Length: 75
Length: 404
Image (tube, rainbow over all chains, first blue to last red):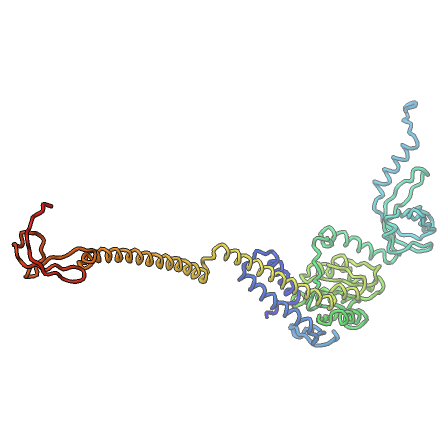
């Protein structure tokens, strides 16, 4: 899974898949492909919904480089 | 009218000319003074008198402007006002029509505020078309605010309750003082550069006009407008509207409201996913159903492509052939049998013994030659005559030839 596959992106992709499926023009092969892709995205979304670890972090800049530190840090 | 070379005016003509001159030459004034009296009318207009040590100036705030006032005019308040001079013709009284009114001291700030607002508005920084959609289902929200104070606490509390799956990346900044504007715009730029966020919340709690002023900073406003990540602002109280609020993609009245806008409730998200999941299944099912129907109708039309049907058809053909074969064999047999029978009849007819049975006789000489004609024999020759049940020994008495 790429870094880009965020929850929102997965949902947008899912929406696109559903719309294509519901247009009823898809071939069987394509349908199977779309369905599998849809299920994969669905799993990504559901997994993300269950993620509650490392939720809050602070962006800290040290020597011109950013790093994320867990929790709330003073500026 | 003209009398003795003087043009005579009506009252209304004078009033109109004065009104025209006032409005032309005394437009968009900024005036400082003290409110001597102030009377709001049921119509929504507010009538007041402004004064300094020597003079008084009657003024009116028409209801559309009165509604938008950020500060209530009260008697005794020192104010800076912005408006145009005009004439109230029915009473022949000139008056200031006020568009904006600020307590003095803040007047300069507001003057700058109005000027900047007008400039940025013209540039399109506040246009509705350039507003970005706030994602309903973010995975990470960037928060730019003070690391201390209620704003951060409120936002995190709401997110914890509503959307515990959404993570937060905090960029702590000062939200007041001379470094605030620089830090805030730097933070927005950095968050954009760092990426990995769906939404930014820029927040600050309530405070004095001066406290909130960094959010009217041109650089901050421009950075908010330029942000690729959608920005929600939650600055001050609901009644305070900063230029940052105008430039933001969404203006939340409070930090808690900002958090609610920023992330859909987890339960609702799950419901939404369930709904999508169901649609995924039913749409796929529908496609399978359509294809299945197609295949079935195809089968009906081109059934001979099915091997077992081909076999059945051949089987049928074969059994027809078989029957025909059987029939033809049988009929051949019967006709052959008939032939044989008739031949047998013929043969039995040809059997000499059969002829004997019918009363015919065969005559032979002593050498056993069958006698067909009288000249084969002489008189007194011995003959043997064979009849059905035995033989007769005789002698020839006389022969006579028949012409047959």
